Image 1 (tube, helix red, strand yellow):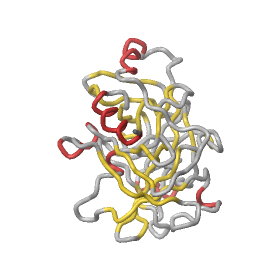
Image 2: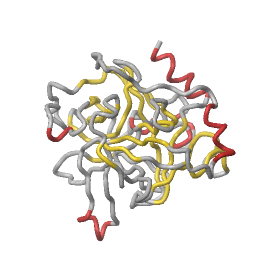
Image 3: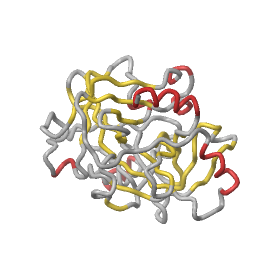
Image 4: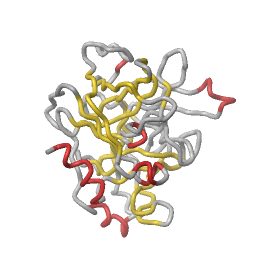
Length: 270
């Protein structure tokens, strides 16, 4: 499972089959039914499927994702959004990427109010509100304020792992070798380790996690997907950015445990 691969840019993915490329977790494993509350988010432009991200149900109608997945582009504003819940959307009843009976339309979507005020990765959190509920036995959970700060003194502890889940690309290569890309639209998971937190590079708003063949990571299309703390349902952060085109080495995660982030998300749940 590879992480978002571009240096400090968003990893939205063109999803029309004619366009070809799609994305998913790298060096990981099939998620199956382990995290049914992790969903595929499809963004439409002019009524047509255009981009996709990953996301997490926090409640039957509230979906958590990245800010760059909910902030409209001036030249092609989103005309609609919908979520797909099956672990393999190409081989189920969701009728991806079109309006199948098992997809659910969004009523509205929001990025953090300061998203536009700085580079995208500084406030990279978004919320989608669904038109009808999706009932699950479990949902993603928010962390406590500043909960992750205690990890700063334990960066070298091999027991600090995360569970990254998403529908992004499994393999990504430079253009000359792009024929080797693998981009099945299936929900996958990886178990990356903590590389940096509260450093000059990550600031206090992100984490840097491993992305290699041993631990797996995330890639294009995993944007907005959850990075659960250990094997819990607590969302430490959402997949935000990557540092190379091949989705390797490390990946950036936007932290959910900051007070301004919780202040933005929590009212939607109330």
